[in-house]
Image (cartoon, rainbow, N blue to C red):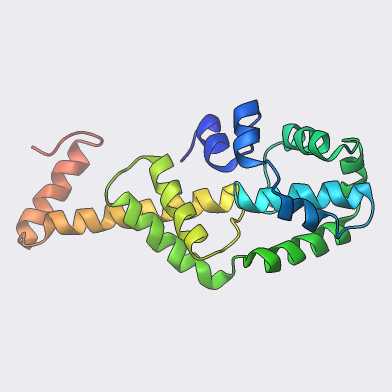
Length: 201
């Protein structure tokens, strides 16, 4: 569905200075929120989780790509050694607790099984206009963000996009054969079987 580059642009963390400044510069209220955590290790880890929930919109647990450039950037802003993040990552319960606190603070929630039908609907709607993977994935992401749902893993998003594209293709095929007689449909099937990957004649 996506190339590695497309996946990074849509669901990864930018490593370039402009991207880091644009997405991950703290406001005064952000800094005040970080000060509610005790110790430099907790503050840096909390900061990483805070900004990831804003962009790309997911939790540290769901991130597939590297966050090394992000950690270095935030550590510099906060004047905390970046090695503190390695300590933070060895505390899974703390990471989970922080993610829950931040989700509540930002008015976000984790995706549930009941959300997948809507995600596929969003993918199918996007795929009705285009067959391009990035545009379909963007449709899924936009739907999740509009409903204040934390983005699931990249793999889940891509599988949903594939399912939505398949649904859109089926709807397109149904629309094309609507009104045709059974005999015409049979001839089309025979034609397609005789020209796999080719054009109808």
